[in-house]
Amino acid sequence: MLSKDYLINEFTSPIDSLSLDELSNMIISENFPLSELIELNFHKDRRISFRSAWVMEKIAFNDINYITPVFEDILNRFNKIHNPSLARHYNKILLQVFSLKKQNTLPEPLKNILDKSNPEIIIEGCFKWILTPKCPVAALIWSIEILLNYIDDYPWLKEELPPIIQRINVDSTPGLKNYCSKISKKFKYF
Figure 1 (cartoon, one colour):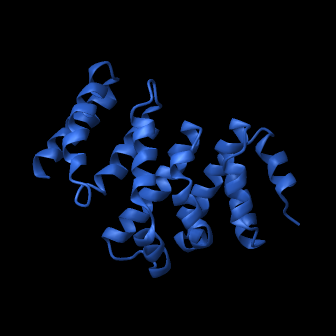
Figure 2: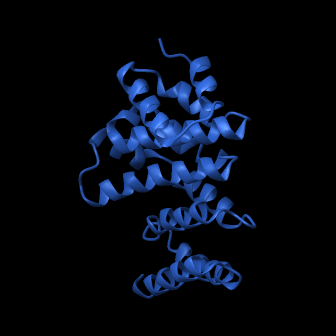
C-alpha cells in the first residue's frame, strides 16, 4: 500500500525519470490522495518538493482529469511556491490547463475551478519568479507565458511586462535573449 512515508523514502533515494513514471502510475492505480502529494510539493526538503512536483506534473500530463480534486488547492497556493523547481512544474501544469482551455478541450470541472479562481494569486506568484534575481530560466519563461494568458483581463500587464522583459534580456543567455525577442514581438499584437 502506497503511503506518504513510502513516497518520501522514494523521493530521497537516487531516482530517475523512469522511477518517477513508475511512481506516478502507482499513485494513479492505487488512487493515492493527491492532497497528500501536494503536501509533499511544499515539503521543506527541496528534493522532496521538487520530485513530488515532478510526479504531480507527470500525473497531470498523463490525464489532466486526475488533478481535478486538487486543482483549486494548486491555484490557491500558487503565490506560496517556495522553490523555483516547484514553480517550474506548477507552471507547466497551469500552462497545460490554459492550452486545453484555448483548444476547448479542458474538462468542464477544471474549467469551472479555473474560472472561479483568483487570478491575482497566480499573477502574484508569476511576478515573484520573474522578479527573482537569477531565477532559473524555465520558471522565468513559464511565468511569463502564464501572464500572457491574463493580458486580456488585466490590461496593465501589457504595460508592465515589456520593460521587465527588456531588463531580463540585458545579461541573459543566448536562449533567453531569443525568447525575449520573440515575446517582445508578441506584444506588438496585443
